[in-house]
Length: 150
Image (cartoon, rainbow, N blue to C red; front, top):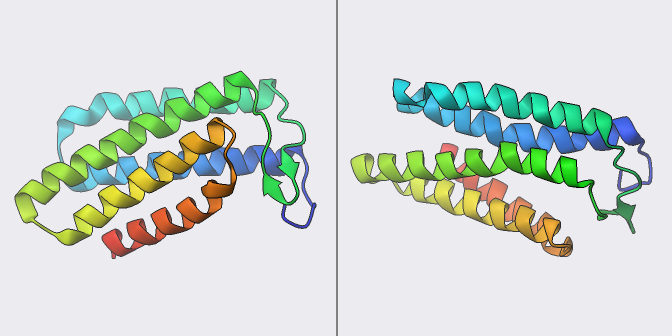
């Protein structure tokens, strides 16, 4: 996309992958945590993903690339559906990492919490039209997550 090579499918796929990646991290955290109380979140995840796919199909994104940066107003349905996938996932990752930190006192878990917070702030700033911070924050957040999961 940075080279102005993109179409609607690529943009939709990018938006889908960004949201579902966070959701997979949350589902992985649940699996590692090993608590069956979170079964409802698995059901919610499936429904939220279906909602995301439906909004990506129903609402054309349009041209959201400006000066080689993903920037543009997303349709409200896509903003809501991607938020329905990512925000609960981020909250659960933080909760599970905090509970695990209390149990194991591993600094890696603090890195995971910091990474999720940084990426979440970046996503929120993108929604309110401050996209420049998005790339730096995503890089830092993913680096922190990687260090935490290593």
